[in-house]
Image 1: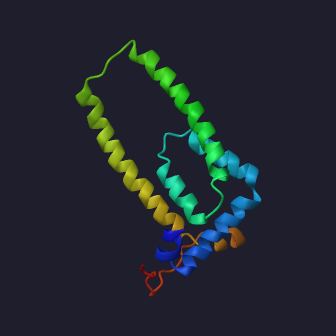
Image 2: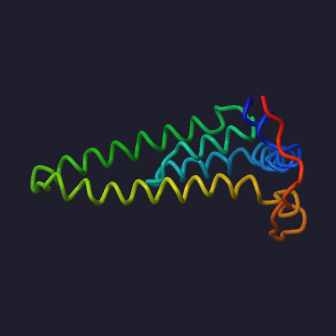
Length: 143
């Protein structure tokens, strides 16, 4: 709530409210989307940040997300332990791949959170056309 109230312009808050209304009306679809996301290897912190901007109830995200992550992590842990018994990797090889992936994924997903706040969701829902919210000359309020 603090980020939404102090760092987002009123136009951006109203724009994100369109997503909140849409997700609230289609609870089964929302459940399915978050369950699907939980099965992907994408980091969850950006999903929770974007969801937090909508100020919806956490249970609409948390229940499907944790079910999906529990099932998918259990599967991957079982699979990885089975494979680890057969092969071993050098520590230096694993770290070099993880580092580049981690940095790239963080930059990309942080950019997606920014894009989430800049898309004119009301126009997209009404007109079925994509457009950006124009930048305002008024900066957001500070603490």
